[in-house]
Structure formats: C-alpha cells, structure tokens
Length: 295
Image (cartoon, rainbow, N blue to C red; front, side, top):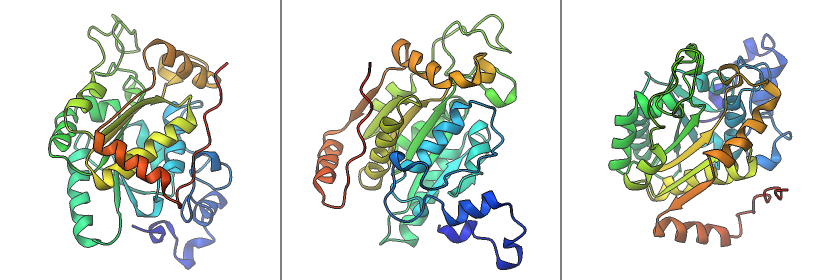
C-alpha cells in the first residue's frame, strides 16, 4: 500500500502516456489535501471511459481528494460504473466479485491491522447501489453488525447504469427506465436508515452538487472508522445516459434531487461526535473551506 504500486519500472516509463506519468508524479499523495485543492494535483486520468457528465466519475474525483491518507488507503470495489474511474486513479484499488466487497474489505482491514500495527491503513468500500444495496446487502449489513472498522461509500445513481438501465433497489418508486418500462414498483431500499440501526457510528447522505460537504463527510467517515467502527456515506451521483438529461446538467439534476428526495442528512454516535470535536481542536487539522452560500 504505497505509491510503488503505480510507479512504472524505468524500462517502460517512457512508453506510457503523459497523463499516466502526471498521475504518478502529481497524484493525491503526500501532504494534506482536500476538495478545495482540486486542480493542484492529478486525481484521475482525464480520458477515463465514463459517459460525458457522469455523476459517478465526479464523485470518485471528489472522494480521491478527500481521503485523509491516500497512500495508506485501500479502495475495495465491485464491477459496475464505479470500477471504470477507480482504476484510472492513483489509488490502491482492488476489485472483487459483485456484491462481496464488504466481506473482502473486512478481511483486508483485519489483515492490515496485524501487518501494520503502528500505521493507519484505511479500507474504504466504494461501489454502486447494485453492489451495496442489492446483491451485496447481506454482506454490507453483516460488516456493520460486526462493527468492522471500514468505511462504505455508495455511489447511488439509482439504476444499473453499465448494463443497459435496469432498475435497482435504489431506483425511485415509479421511475421509468430503459429496462423498467412500467416503472419501479417499490420504493428505494432504505439503506441509510439501515445504517443508523445496524452498527454504523457515523453516516451521511449527500449529493455531488455539494463538493465541500461531500469531502467533509468522506473525511469524517474514514477518520471515525479508524478508531470507532463502521461508517457509511451515501452519495447521489446521477446518470445522464440512463436518466435522459443533457450531460452538462448533472449538477442541476443533483441539486433538484436535494430539494426532492436526497436532502442532506448526517448522524453520529456520541462517541463519534466527541472524537470529531477533539480532531477539530488538534493543531495539525486545518478547516475545510465553507460551502458556498445558497441563493
């Protein structure tokens, strides 16, 4: 778990495209960074294979900028849209079978705690709504029940986007999709509510329309998982391809969702609140930039 994994051997270095060289030389490693530092380092290859305006790709960029210690972070994912951008970052990334990412992450976290007892090795699950809420829901919940010290981040585009537009458990009631012509017949699975009662010490529901807020809650979640137990962040990352809106309207779609059904919410245990209060007063901690004032 270091930058060595992305550093090419000298014999092949000159054969790689400039974008990859920049990713290695100017990635998110070293020093304290945050979302407000985007543009001063390279967090993802520009020519990644996501659709134009993809909310998931934007969420991955913001997440990469928010991690407290990228070089000592292992991202565990699953097949799906999130995979396409995560493999284009300068992060340690492991892909798993569809749905078992929380089980794999729990095992890796335990192993890393034994192998590196003096170093924080953060394990963060980053997967879509299908991997976490549908096929992987049992392993997601059981990692929370067991109080595994991992962070779970759901990139919720409310659809199986990379396989043609089928409804997922997180699609909204009544939503008509490419492969759901009659509309979704049941409400969104209440994963955020399940996190509250299943052992998570911290949780937040956000959208990609609030980058500073997203960065703050991801950082909180990772830091709290180090010390206290499982944490959960649910990010609305709309899909222009399957939701049929222009690719330059992704942030508008996310802002509309905030007013409609994806309002910001945050919960934390008493222990978590006390821990964050202590972190806030630590001299090495710098404050995140405030969110822009709402009109």
